[in-house]
Length: 436
Image (cartoon, rainbow, N blue to C red; front, side, top):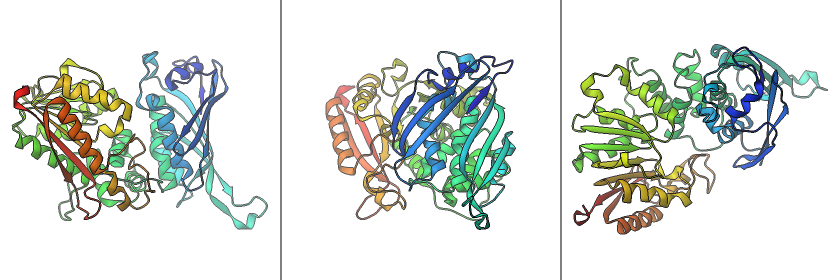
């Protein structure tokens, strides 16, 4: 990736602030897909170039998909548009050149142009022959890809993050509802208007039709729905329904969704007038901004708007704003926290915030063997830090309940397998009366 100086971005070495990578240092990191090295071959005010070298562990993982995951790990803050040291740079459009010497272009010779062109990139894709010494063999499925355009760095990285796996048309891990969520988060501001939106969603989501339909419906919320072909609810939809039913059962009037993301649960809470006070909290400012847009808070009637609030907060730190609620929901949150930080989350939720009811949902790792393409011992999502078995989750829930004067019950969500249980498990913690 090369940045060129412009009037709005006169010193291209400042891109190091956006990337959170110092130009004078070489970064090496071991990632699940292999060893990654980040370095700057050239640095000046006029032009700065950054190179990412990925040494894959094996040849099983699609190269472009592996690179997309590496980008999300190496440049997480840049991808989400966060720069605490130089926040004024985040919204500056930069003249960028993205080069990938061996990019897959499976299926169509003009695929790269059809994907990147409508976003405003100038695309140069030079076919790579199968063997330069044997021209009669023709070209391979790879191209030497060069993209040039003027974008904010966050937008450019999100284009790559979404479209590189689309070029591969294959993923090396299980594709589930979390992937649909990730697609909407990363591309929600442009995918709905992209002429190849169906192709992008289909390839990104491993051609799982129910996930593609769910993602595209959320990208264009006002589009007319086709009710002629009924479909089974996705696991994500079943999860939300189960959580809503549990909140209704305990009579909750005030609810905080901790780790609310883009606001899927918040939207359903708003639709039910029995929930009088609703708060969505997330550590990501970008996620909260998308929730704000998705919920259309700016267009909401005043009476409805007073029912909901969005807060930037972390699940692992004490925050007095999280106190005083009937119920707190952590829906698919704990598995994204490092195990050594899980006690901090427990303290902030059960000792500091201390709601009357706490709902926690998380994957059941035993169910993973039923997902095709998921290797033994692998997590369901690349961002997961751990995944509990049913026994481990029950043991953890019992310990938390005992230490903080709650009662707990555990139930499953989703289709039931006689041997492996359900894909999602939920713990319902109820504060004991004598501790109130």
